[in-house]
Each structure stands twice: as structure tokens, then as C-alpha cells.
Length: 143
Figure: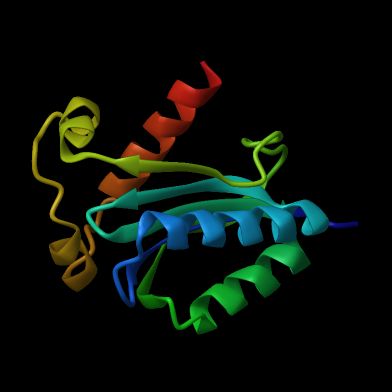
């Protein structure tokens, strides 16, 4: 029996992508995700990718492995992973949002989310601040 699994990670863009590059990346990711029945969300915050993907364990492990090998990503940081009983993003092959600093303040209550520092010294708390931004965005889409 296939178990549902999720992975959430953050990475640095290897090179700054233009909006057209991101649109192409999203088109390809959505097509692949539809074929593999993978759903999720991708955020772009301060030049960093934050992604949550979910699907069957074997497919998620394979996709995350290919993401880690993708030259467009540097310094991949696993934020969270595990098993779920049901999907959070049933209808989204890959939702996308570019998050502005002003939106971060509304979500976290403080203006500066210093992602570069979080790469160097991840917080010890279980819930990474980036996950709060991710889940808040998700809630706003599904509300």
C-alpha cells in the first residue's frame, strides 16, 4: 500500500530567474506533477524557493532526489517531511506565489525574515519560520 508523504524544503536560486524562466519552470513542474499525482505549493521569498510537495512516498522520494540534483537549486535545506493521512493541496499540481517583505510582516509579525541567516543557523524550534509563511499562504488560498 502506498503511503502519502510530504517534503518541505528551502533552496537558494543558483542564478536569479526572470519571471519568464519561473513561468517555464512552473509549466514543466505542473505537467510532471499531474502525471505523478504530486500536489503542492511553491513560494519565492527573497530569491529563495520554498516548496511543499505531497504524493505517494516513492514518487516524492524520487522527485525530491531530482530536486536536490537540479543545478537551479543551491544549499537545499529540508524544513520538514513525514507522512500524512490526506492531501493538503488536492487540486494544486503546483500553486505559486512570489511573497513580498510586507506580506511576511503581516504573517510573522516582524518585518525581516533573514533567510540567509536561517541557512547558516537553522532555528532549533520545530516549526521553521518559513513554514509559518508557507502555511499562512496556503490557508489564504483555501479560505
